[in-house]
Length: 449
Image (cartoon, rainbow, N blue to C red; front, side):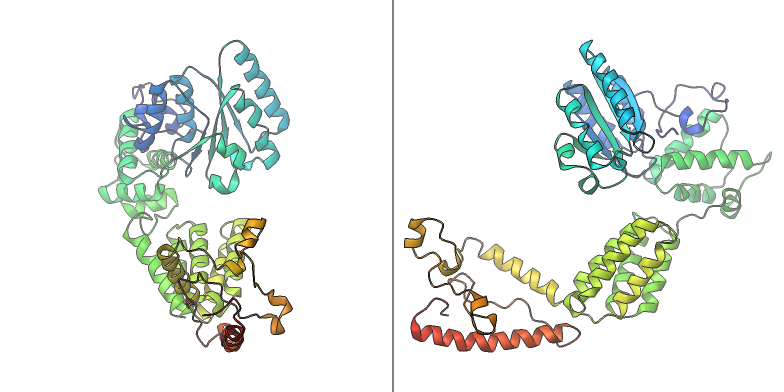
């Protein structure tokens, strides 16, 4: 399916065939690509690469319908590279071998191949490793496309040999420009009033291919002289517009409301805001990540299972997909909202980070440092260290902070949830530490305050 959107040399008469509108609007050069100016504009990353005469392997990372496939085709055309395209969904090892052999033959004849691999993250680790030899010897310039985070889905060895370029969801202005170009190509305006036109842009949700497909549906459905309003548009295309623009205030307002409802232990309000975001078309994995964040920021060790539940819900959605997986996220939302709350771990981390930045040059006390050489041993490294497991209660009470800092307390658990038990342990260890450090001071051993 075509997926690049920009200017076209075709006249409306020439565009009257049965080819999909997205294909008819395919641009002929990078400068015509819409919505990715940071890559294809006059000062874009790809424009600079082409101007330098040196193109390396690339990973295109971004949402569907943002132009990854067509940009790859245009790159091959503007650098005089042979273009080969495969999809990781439909290709296996045998297909890769054929592509590599054809590329080697071209390479021996003096021409490189730009190999575009769609959905490259679908290849397993061993298959991804198969690209390394042909990348290293210059047989192919690999351009992989993925909608998933390359850091998690692609081999480190592959990533180290390729530059990752991010494709952005198309802004409303870019989508509006595509509609104008579509109208020029088709030769007539879209039969929509201003409000319906704005709703159509929101329905596309940043996907250029989607808005052109929707526009085709509108043209097909409209009778002679008919103009659709927003309600009529939704009846025709059978698709709801997102309730808010995910890049604007509505997105941030609702996620803030969800977070505060969970923090405030109100599961009903939290579910309401979660449902509103699902209904608005919010990416469920974004919500999964936010729930994981709530588990560590607002619950922490008051209920150590909160993080387990939130992470499991995120993985369950990833496994089940939508809409079935949404129930797992709703279940996690209820669990987090009803769990005991504590930000003690969160505030302890922030306080320890501030201390690390202030005292980052201090060495740990010598008695807890290893002494791998005779010189270090003669300097007192490791001298006097007490192995806690050999001490009564498996606790020596020695100090571990740098001597110039003295003891600090960052973690102060409240007396609720599981942290009530942690508080008891800490209070007991504080008592033992005082007793054993007092004994150590009498003997002049390491661990003195």
